[in-house]
Length: 407
Ligand SMILES: *Cc1c(COP(=O)(O)O)cnc(C)c1O
Image 1 (tube, rainbow, N blue to C red):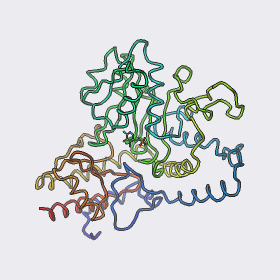
Image 2 (image 1 turned 60 degrees about the horizontal axis):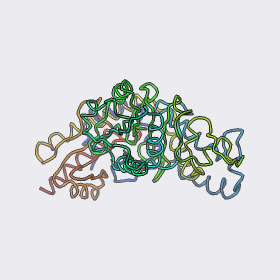
Image 3 (image 1 turned 60 degrees about the vertical axis):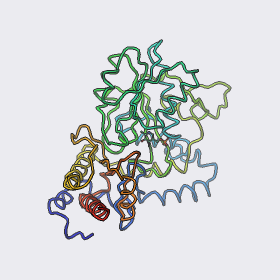
Image 4 (image 1 turned 30 degrees about the horizontal axis):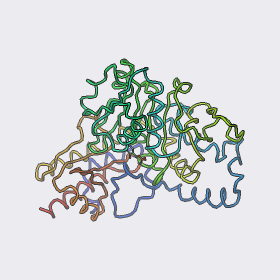
């Protein structure tokens, strides 16, 4: 793969890319085009040093004092979840006290579903969701229903039919904004507005949204949300997840896992749970300091990023990939399943191919790292912070080479 052959119009797009300098903030291995940042974001360069400091200095030297050391300056471990929450809040259109950081997306989905049912209209027992929602969302809803003795109804309908099912018997709507297989993006604003008009509480999974494009939960009037720290936020494998609870629900929403770290004063060691102010009440146990430190550092890469520029670049990258793949889709059994309309596209492009699994194995062998999803999906994630249009070109040429070699 030689850079000399990259088309001029793509080089020109890279030359005027306002985010081009952000690539330097990441460690990207040589000889690889990494198109899986929607599953595990690349390593931000500042993270290893931060992890070393957290381990050697904060843990090794200061030991238990680090829980409170620097509390005046907001540097204490105890406040780390809140500091990270504030950084995520800007990316999702929330206020800092509406975001809680910790646990996994799955656990947070449980917490917000319980919270949502607790503030739902009395008597409503239906959770409406996308039949093809990410498995963990479906499983957590099933588990909650079992816990409640099967008194809920989990109503699963195709995503395209959701709006027709926003009826007055629905308690909560559980949706993932960007479909993990197809990359289809839902209109969060419109669906939230329609749901609210029916008295339905909304729960959004932003796993493939946060850090990929701007989200405006407050503007949309969304009720609850969850999302991942290790995808577009680049917080590292198993990074803590986040949850969002709109301020208007803080007083009434039940805290399903009412642990001591969500208590208003954990070291008062009181016998009864008194929730901390704001979403902090949803932080159940001791903050995962090492992984929070990595996520905290990773989020600093976003600090000066214009989220509209991020979205514009994401669309330019995915447009470019779709265009470059078009002649291949004519020659090989590739079917684009990602919407072409910008408003309906996240930051990934997916194709069906009858041998998708084998094709992706060959691609990864060739240094084009995307992923395969059952049953026949080739998935390519684009990360506007570290991809160039030249990368997109190399990826498409790599796909061409693999398909030609297999033919
Ligand atoms: C990746 C992903 C998750 C991951 O959940 P974890 O608990 O972090 O493993 C949840 N929901 C969606 C939609 C995802 O894409």
